Length: 210
Length: 397
Image 1 (cartoon, each protein chain N blue to C red):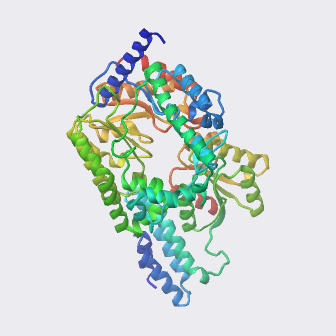
Image 2 (image 1 turned 90 degrees about the vertical axis):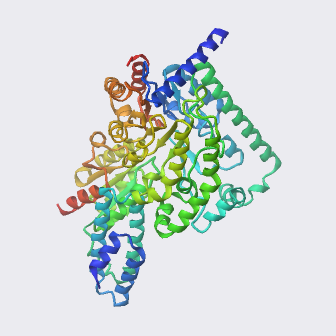
């Protein structure tokens, strides 16, 4: 298996080549599956860098997420299932009163490529559901997405719901999306805010490691 | 209104059109005009219920009147005619939209797959009849009883009357001019790639198709141009040129797809069509307003090569000062961010507006506007908008 070729195919968004190589991993018994996935993750990092540099844009990130998911599907049977690749589990969702999911889905793909097991609660998610899930699953990292200015209220309501549940100090909360800024982050009471998927991944990885 | 008042409003409207046109043409004016990008925010501001305003013309008219009586704007993007749902609801279906007390929006949907794109283009009416309408209203939509159809047509007539009525209210009673004429070739000016993103495939499927089905997407864009853009270009070259006394702009275009296209894709799928149309407007000395959703700063240089007075870029999220630097020949519409309008103080709003007028408008080339449509209750505060309107209507350049 040529991990460099897998990395390049992912970074260059060469879907056919990537799928062929992932299938090869399976045809050879699947022993190299973890190395292949690591190469995909490295390739996704380059996708993120090319996005930051302006070579790729939103459509490319959506496509990258799509082919990464397809690649993982191919090798899934060879994964041990013990979560050994995961750097941690986290919650991601679009907050209440907001139905936008394009940005959230891009961030999800990048987080998964960054080693997270993401519990995606979907769109228009009320604070109680996020708190309940965090409690039930023992989640420590929460990422909230939104596009409308209404989302700021919902993000604040979510932070307040964690406070009311006595869990605020147990979780780290990052917010992102069009209306989010440093000032909005302070109003919401979140721990961090992000303007790009790459920053979200970096911040969450830092939290997971600490 | 007596005769003198009517004449006063007529003169005011003409004066406002002149202000918009002069700024768009980089001619210094005595003040900067303000084309307000307020949509459903008006409903919350008037203290009305959103569901009622979207389904009751009388409520929406009250909303628009309240807005125009309260805020001294020179232009208004929506005079209450967007988001009216009576026609669709008369069909007994809620369609793809939703509305609550807080928000109105469209549910994610796409009319085509990559396999049916060309079927749509071949015969849009047939495709709409056989595929889109059954999906929207159910398979038996054509079998609705006669009473339902009568109700639908009645609501459609009422809506048409409402559009004319609100145009008249805003123009004759408040001196508000119309933004731009309708495109004579096809309602709104829409490029093939835009139609695929907004209606036919949606953002996700188009993003994937741009890579997986590149030839098909290119083919669609070319055929779309033949059908819709080429006739428009021909009509533009044959037209009498600018319509200075009727509208603020000679044409209006909305762009969205540049937000997903990488530079190579932009050059392949959008720019060739857009450029040919802009060439025609430039040749005729006409002015086009382009509303660029999201950010278009990275493509600013493309528009720089047109002479002043051809393109006015309405910026949704880009920094207007950065855009002016990147494309000094392009007039700018915008400058007011949601962050400022919702989170700033009236003093901060006035200070920012003054800076915009001084630095971007003194030599012409600037029209004040809100970047994002004011849609939700938190998008702006009344005090901030009032402060801006009072300032900009009085501030002499």
